[in-house]
Amino acid sequence: MAHFDTNRPAGSNFHTDPFGDDVREKPFDGLDGIIQDDTTTFTTTTSGIPAMDPSSSLRDAGHTEAQSLIFNYRRTKSPPLPGVPSRQPTPSLSERNAPVFGDLSVPYKDEDSYSTHPSSFVGKSDDHLVHNAADMGRSDSYQDLEYAEPLDENSKLATDRASPFQKALGMNTGKYPMDQRIEDKKRGIGRQKHPFIVWALTIIMIGVFIDELVVNSRAQGTPVSFKPVVNPMLGPSESALINLGARFPPCMKVVQGLPLTTQMPCLNDTANPPDRLCSIEDVCGFGGFNGGEPNQWFRFITPIFLHAGFIHIILNMLAQLTISAQIEREMGSAGFFITYFAAGIFGNVLGGNFSLVGAPSIGASGAIFGTVAVTWVDLFAHWKYQYRPGKKLAIMTVELLFGIALGYIPYVDNFAHLGGLCMGLLVGTTLYPVISPTKRHKLIMWAFRLAAIPLAIVLFVVLIRNFYTSDPYAACSGCRYLSCIPTASNNHCQGTGFSTNTTTGGSSI
Image 1 (cartoon, rainbow, N blue to C red):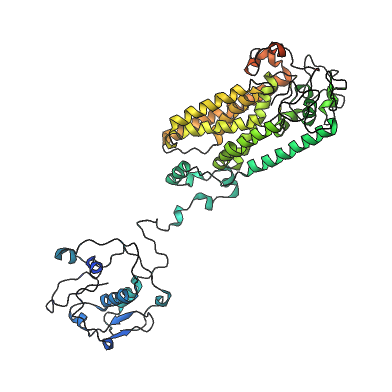
Image 2 (spheres, rainbow, N blue to C red; image 1 turned 180 degrees about the horizontal axis):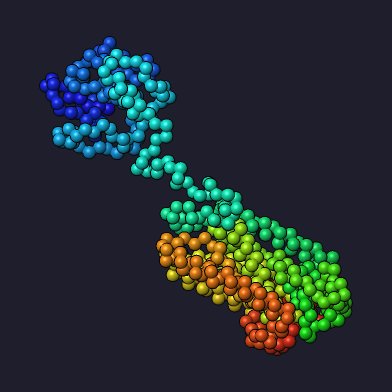
């Protein structure tokens, strides 16, 4: 409300601030000299805002109709606002002489009844002032600038304008405000809200595991293999896993020491030693080798979807639905899909080269280790944005060493873990959305990316070629010890690891 002093001499040039802070401290002070006769007030025909008659004492005191209009509008229509902070003491005389025309720190909004411009007013000379005063409080979209950013179409995220292809690959991050990206990073907000690929993979893997149990039940009479030995992971027999697509080099190439005439336990064998023997071609399934050499190359891929038993799939799905899911939210589905399968396939390629060739291998562990590797990329690339990064590094180091140590347990393929970790670092460095606040940081990241891409390709080409054309053990005779502790039971990690005495003793996961 405006505060007017009617005790000043007529004709005074003293300027009164109609919106000064003192008017809120003492809203009705100084109004005793104003004529309060209702006959001296009227309402404009369209705005509904009460205004003083130009002939009133306010005009004699040197105040315009615009000031009178605002005063009466605030006096009659503005409700007290909760939470408005108390004002400072009344400003000095020199402060009030300053030409201040409004204190916009207190938000207000006109009602719908004031949405029309006034069409007539008694005074002619000040019509434009009354028009401006009536519009002064009107706002179609008011924001308190102390707490809200002004509406700016240019500040919208690039995701509002990017194509679906750009959104999938995260190519729109260049227009994503840097401050907002940093804040989202600290809060754990990534490119998308839901891990769709992780959910889909989990559903598929559970479905495939149910099929494993059905196949073993038809062959042995029980979903879990208990004869001739118990599967320690509580799942199907070794022969059933090979038949369903486990990584088993004799099904993929000619293996020295395991010719195609080698006999091995059939799916329905329950005796120990086995009394039902089948050829490698029969156990490998998928239509056999059609009279030629084994070349079931797809066994680099299919093991990702298979699991050795209930314990195996529960542990992997827990890791996948937590660690891998968060990585997908941060990377986006497209980048996560590439990283996940590149790590999983490369883990099987590395294991096919250096693990015992007579032991089948299955599981998504290599792919999951690839997503774990991405967390290391995130840690070092965003070190200053991490909460207590030193402590996080220590915890991640212990977890990594523990995961590698598990690779020495029987039935676990450490090469799948190590291969997935290695490829996850390379692909994750390339595809993970890294925040680069400086040109130096950006140059370093692009240098790593340009080095990681050709290195990943070279590793794939060299190891696949080595698998099919060379003796892996000759290339690295000591590599087998990265996944095998020499004991008398495994012939001190020598030979192929194949045995016909048991049906579950050599599977790796």
